[in-house]
Image 1 (cartoon, rainbow, N blue to C red):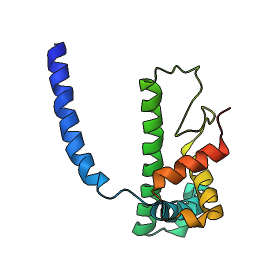
Image 2: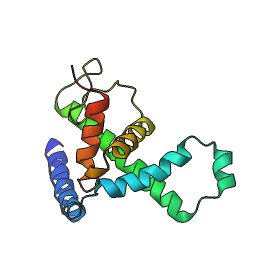
Image 3: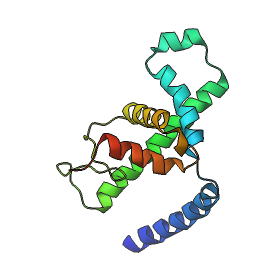
Length: 143
């Protein structure tokens, strides 16, 4: 049974790498993620009823989805990093060279990133993952 699991895992890994290779051809820039997240941040504090009244366009909803999805990916990667590093729930949490509290939520990360980019527009041409890392490290330095 273990041999079948290993074979399945290897097939899945090869398939995933072929898909991620296409995705890696163009990594998101900070400007792209910032633009989507700036629009998302305007809607985050609204209730469902207020959002319905605003009647956001399909493009607005896609922008929100792009931003939230990007940060969900960052959080999933951080979780995987913790698992691979053998961290337990009592260990210090570490995301991209930062040490945020364990209860850090996606919306908080988005706000931190947008504020960082507001303060550092000269970094808009950098890869998004780099400026996200910098924003979190500035907000939650490891001690």
